Length: 367
Ligand SMILES: Cc1ncc(COP(=O)(O)O)c(C=O)c1O
Image (cartoon, rainbow, N blue to C red; front, top):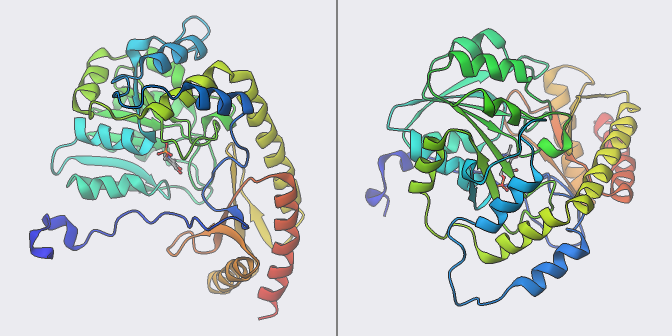
């Protein structure tokens, strides 16, 4: 069959998703929200699904209207509907950015390690991936960011997997010097202290991407949005998107969540408080290094001996956790093979995780 494929398929590995086991696991591997959406949202969703035989609104206008009402670009101005494109999650929106702006052999700049889809999309679109390694503390090497040319540069802020936010002054500097589109993936921004959204008023090559998958607890529904104050960018992306890209259930649920924003904010506050508590508990374990995070996940490094020892212990802990039905995220490749990424769960699950992690660490240390 493979003779029928496009050439890139010969080497293409595709995206490797985190495991999605059946119920009964403590699942801290894919950065989902541990809480369901508020009951009021579920209720609106149940009551709002009408006329299923009809296509959904092509532009998710009600969602855009409510976003324009809820979201402020900065102190002076609110978001305008014509600055938004709604998509089936950020993964679709990232795909749309490539579809709109990337020709074969265009250079796409991003930082490593980061979200795996950037490289996957480069492969699919025959773009040249220009991966700039992050500093060992996961900060961005500024000079490289400012001086590397390309057609598209993607920042992930807060960055998956470490959870650090990219400083706005760096994004601003890049917007001034970079000759292409600057996209900021803000999938986890509601757990962070600041956003790059305000910079869109100044830079017409800047695009912000956001999702309802994380802070709004709606990963299963697939909905997110793009913001740019550049009308041409919005019109271009809208032109290439599939007409009915966001299904009715996702539109109804997102609208409901935005209308019940204060209840969503309560959940976000709970997750942030729990993150800080979990960071505190993990910092008590002397054999690991805990990295600062502004997200709903925490990156830790096994720091017992040399790289090889750390990696072995890390793998052992992963499998021992798995035997006990606890899933975290580990990485098969450098520079992350001594690391684990732990999604913030409910307090009782996090307590259990920390207790079992310590037991598994002892097993790992004893060889
Ligand atoms: C950094 C980052 N961007 C985008 C996504 C995809 O988000 P969505 O569920 O909206 O497609 C993820 C999912 O884990 C992510 O970690």
